[in-house]
Length: 70
Image (tube, rainbow, N blue to C red; front, side, top):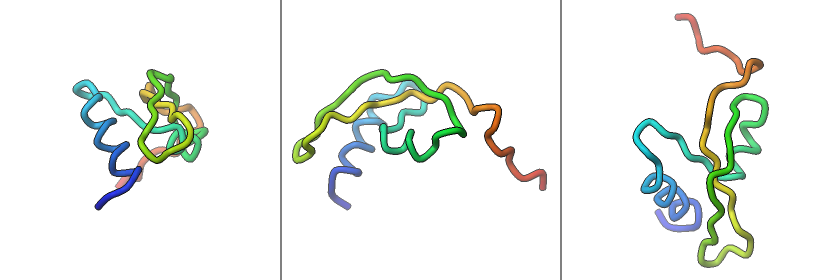
């Protein structure tokens, strides 16, 4: 596997503290309304024209669906 997503995932994984979940701005947009997070940094990847914001997830939002009760 190669590409920008793999490169970004490796950077996020290396940077995350134990128990911390880091996601890109793109992931944060897709999860909008289900989780809260705060911007912790911005990175520029080779071959990507714009900086990418990195978020640390803080908690599920109150409107997030709960897991199955099975």
